[in-house]
Image (cartoon, rainbow, N blue to C red; front, side, top):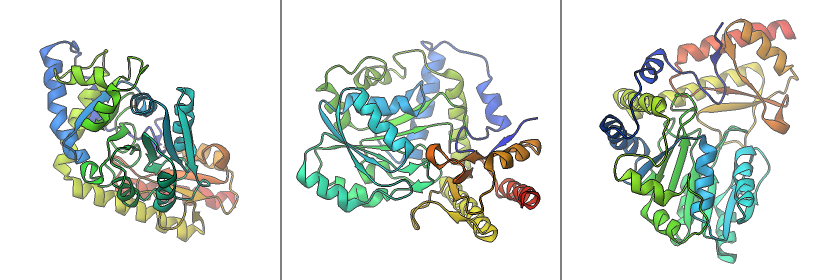
Length: 357
């Protein structure tokens, strides 16, 4: 039996998208592929609110992390960390031989603008890396306030992970001054994993030209050369690109403002349920993610057992991430999820919890 996914990724993929992905294969050096690539570009730029080029990586979002670390940093960068994935990005920069400092807060707290300003006033960094929506804790960092600080340091590259926020809420990439805005398609895009997208500014591309030892697979300057021909340096994930092209059509047909409003309603529905059940939202108040809810397990339920029982009824949620396992659990409400589907899940959880008390 298929379990409908309410985990933070991969998310549920519709039958329509599965059909788009399953269409006959084409060669990646063919005119058909160039047409597919060209079809995606204006739509993905509209979704990301950018005039910048958008590159497609045949990798998870971690590959786009690596592209940022390898292309925009010769020596020193700053990571704002507040959970597992922001900490992972920091470790990745260190693993690539970069001098990477961390401006850290406890899991569940938000990275704030003023500490960043103080740090940038005292030290010089080539790049600042921020995770917008920290999936491990269900926290949404104050991107607009942080972006205002970054505009006072125009020589510094601003890289933002929007993995679990892009297409769930408005992100005005160009207005915010984001040089590299990256996301994987397996979350709010509601596509299968294996493809990441990133808008890349001319400033970032010029910086990349000055950085040595970028490797090849994630070299943005190499990608830029192929992008000019509506192509990619290496064999791309063509099926996922078929799906992306179709899903972008669906998003624009739904209208982005309607999609964002639906995600807000889903979040509110989940938060109302949390309050009704006597649980609490884990992240700092006022900084809750749109696309998923990370919930304190205040009643001490066995989350693994809850998920096992949910599986028997055709659903799946997530335990807490890493050190938050059993202390929290996470419910995704992103992608193509409807209010009816979420309410069915929450009703099912209610029926199971009643037997676990």
